[in-house]
Image (tube, rainbow over all chains, first blue to last red; front, side, top):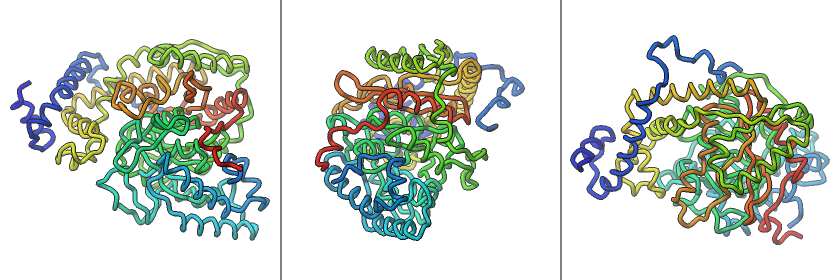
Length: 63
Length: 467
């Protein structure tokens, strides 16, 4: 990931204009974050049909 | 100093009620102990001696007039410094918040004051309650069992102060294990109640409304149950507070564990722990078996994916800190918080939604699991307290690895001391139960405690200077 891409991401999502030092520090963390999110994306976490979602079984709201 | 400091609330309360012990003398002694020991331990950020003595005087007068309010009347207590106490700073252990003062008490503070407790001060924590060392810009808290070690976090000051008998109990907050992990590291009892049982009104900022819980840190299990009696109950000021039946959480403590099914989740929890930790906790499980519990090995395969789901919740906490994070890492003493806040902003709506659905799947798996067993038993942490120096190592990052699933699941979970590692540091046994069965979690913890240590064990620093 180039510094320009990283800088644009930070401007867009964080609303901040960080310097080179901060960007270098963030780079491995951002790359790791995207890697984890790719893993999450691959998981089958159920269909898109809201009727399949298990909200009714959330015991936290039914003491 | 007298040996009163070493006592628990349930030992002291009858003595206070009979007027054999004076709340004023008790508070004065607590303040003296803080003055002499806290130069080394740094468990408090704020101590308000004059107000505490005035509150103790009021308690003493009420008791003399026959208006005894219950077990906490006249007892010195602490509050974690991310919980509002009217007129006192709520710093979150951040330099950005040192002059932040509320004109109201958090509901838990109001309830403790209503029970007659004497609040002596506010305890140190990991900055913004987002870490496991409690080593921050407003002081480095040391573990009373070994001052070169962390007390854990984020409620590190509370756990260390209770462990060293500077106070008789404290209220902590637990978003990923911040009550249970420091309690395990410091050799005391910490309970994360069922989600919605204890009000979070006045926790500042309300960093993580899906995962955060408030609960007791106490010297022993009976004190934790007694505190829960005061803290629990619906609060209309907290939209996540859930109406539930009032219970006496001490009522069933002595019922034992005979016939209860105790699940031992070998995957995830035991797999990540060190060999020594596994051995000590398995010995604790054997103790439960010897008391008549039926032990069953169980598995929760979906937990393999839990770290992916928990990543997607960073965003919730991060939003409160974003204005500071935009200024750069120097706004934070622990600059890893800045990193987490910034990276957390990159999550997409779809990723957050997928994370929530993954949590729901894990929750379903646990609901099935809890139909097979009554309680789960496992290590609270992967290892004992780690050194203060070099605290950003893997140990610090993984300190809440075993506790955090129960924050997302909302199940009640307690850490109770279960012996010592070879280096003399305390180890915690974590017991988790079904939603709204906090009394069962306390009951099993009590049975274990009574069969082993018998209750509070003081570190050497706590007894130094005692008459």
